[in-house]
Length: 320
View 1 (tube, rainbow, N blue to C red):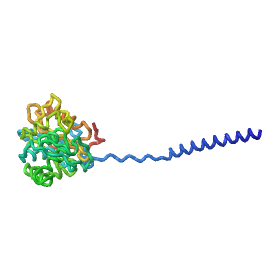
View 2 (cartoon, one colour):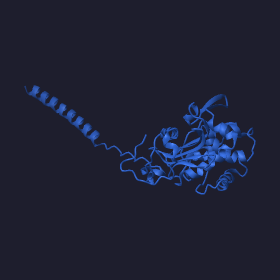
View 3 (cartoon, rainbow, N blue to C red):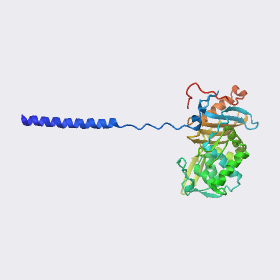
View 4 (tube, helix red, strand yellow):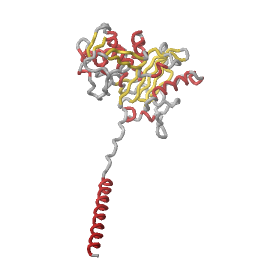
């Protein structure tokens, strides 16, 4: 009996220890504190309250402008003078400077480590050592928004990147883009800034070059990179939409800028320039373009909507 009692006691003690161990494990697990998630970074437009401005079309872009290309008549505007980061819309000026430099489009340029994105750490399929013609690099910069392509174009300009950026800013001044400033050719820096009014001027100037119209609206391009062939696609899905007649376009995105889009398109029998900046959702800039098109095709578009007052929203702005 004593032996049996001792065994029972030992067994009870062992179970108690095991239970205590489990309790300690559960307590340890419960004691773990999950690090609070960092709050989402705001775009410059969100931080300055531009998303609180309502408009009759319920656009998701905090800045919008629609201009008749031929008459310069403003058909729709929302915060058109707001100066914001423009992300890869920058590449439209990059392309304009390249074509106006009259450099050979057949000259082969090399992508180097200098073209790697150290600003945002973005990836690229143009590996260091890739060799492409200036024309192909221009094509990829406009169509697929390739950052290494844009940087390589600027770097191979006479005088290098500093001279290229100076040329970008000189061109902005020449076009009357008073609120525009560039610090590099890709748009990765939030210090590249402009307004919708200025960008409309840029789109009109770039449209004057058939090469830029062709390359920016090209749906795709196959490029031989060493022993492999890589296919690149247009970042603007509307170029594949047969209901759109787009003559020139460029998309852009960094957190600070939100989703951006500029286009030249023929709508309702008119050649129009459309600018959308700081759109909140991934596809909302395209949705805004569709909203504007439906409005233009309706009877409501007979009377232009100009310079909408900054009327704060009564509730939270919807995001798509």
